[in-house]
Structure formats: C-alpha cells, structure tokens
Amino acid sequence: MSDPRPTVVLTGASRGIGHATVQRFSNEGWQVITCSRDDIPEHCKRDPNWTHHIPTDLSDAASVASFIEDANEILGDRPLHALVNNAAVSPKASFSERLGCLNGDIASWRGVFELNFFTPLSLCRGLAQALGRGARDIRDGEDDKPFGAAIVNITSIAGHAVHPFAGSAYSTSKSALSALTREMSVEFAQLGVRVNAVAPGEIATEMIGPEYEPLITRIPLQRMGEASEVASCVFQLCRRDFSYVTGTEVFVTGGQHLY
Image (cartoon, rainbow, N blue to C red):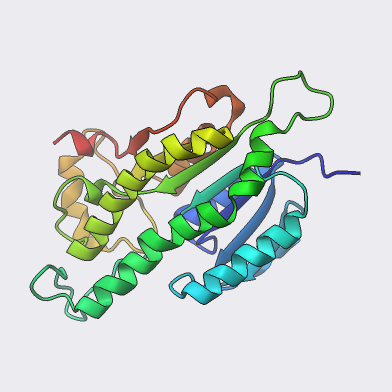
C-alpha cells in the first residue's frame, strides 16, 4: 500500500528557516525527507512525519550526488510533491567586515556559488523524475485533479539590492538563483512541475546579531520577520491551490524590498 502522505525534500533542515519549514510541512501531514551538515535536534527524531534525515555536505558535489541517490532510493517509484532548496552559506570576515568584491577570497566565492547555486540546480535535476510523478499524482479519495509538484528556491532580499551585511558572493549567488528560478519554471513546466522562489528579508534566526537592529527602521512593518512566516509562504506555494503560479518570486520582507 502506498504512503498516503504527500512528500517534501528540504535542505538545510536543522535550524532557522529550514527547521521552521519542516515543522510546517509535518504539521500539515507531509512526509519529510531532509539533509543538512548537522544532525536534527533530538526532539525532532520523534516526529512521525520526519522519516529520513541524511547528513550531507551540500558544498561538496559528491556528497550532493550521494544524497540525491539516497532520496531517490527512499522514494522508489513513489511521487515527490515538493523540493525546497533552503540551505545556503554567507561567509563573514572574522572582524565582522562585509566580504565584498575586493576583499573576498576567490576560492570562497566558488564555495558560496557551489552551495547556493549549483547544489539547488543539481537537486532539481536529480529529483526531476520523482517530481514529475508528483505532478501527475492523483490522491486516493480525492477528485481527479493531480496533486501537483513544486520547487521552491529560497533566495534573499540581498539578491535584489546591496545589503549592508550580506557579502557580495552571497548576494550575487542569490541573484543568480532568482534567475535560475525563472529559467527552470519554463523548462520544468514540461514536466508539470511549478518553480517559484521566496525571498526573505530580515528574519529573526540564529544568524541575526545586534548589528541588524538599525535595519528595522527600513522595514515598513517595523519588525523582523519570524522563520514561521517564511515557512508559511513556502508551504502555500506548494499547495494545489497555487497550481497556476510558477516563475514567481515572493518577497517576505515586511515591505523592506520596496525601498
């Protein structure tokens, strides 16, 4: 008997936005397959929907290929209904200086693009067949409309304007991921798979320090966002209700991107 739960694969699941997104999908009854460099928190191992977590170095192409193989083996011939490319890296100098075009090591730039850009591309390609099955999946006991499949890439407000703390490598990698989202939305439409992006602004996670407080004055809603608010947007883009939405980037910034 096939698993009645829809399935999501998500990267960077152990903390922050990724962890909140896992919790949202699990609360909605989805089976969750994840990877990150770290193991998941101990209390999450009791989550009956979080069935597989595979420690993976997403900056290493061979490790990514191994995760894709493992994920496809877990899925077998079952459909995949969502892929969320959340994992990213934003290197900082030891003295808190923004790493830019002049002071950023070129090897570090390559590492940032490997994780932030090439890994999402590899995962989308490697899981395309499973996503195609998700696009055609008709759930037992529902109408004859396919459940659908979606890819959501987590980009950033920094990919659209110069940010005081995000380095140039991170910002340009996220800008490239925005462009990749548009390109993939056209190509993956042939499989019936929708591709969208969510661009967070200042979100209260472990990565945010006190230096971010002055940025609140530039946010119309006058507060930082919560990881759960980003997770809610990601989840909605994967729902069947959004079956005609593709090639879109949604800003979850409290209005900050308007300036």
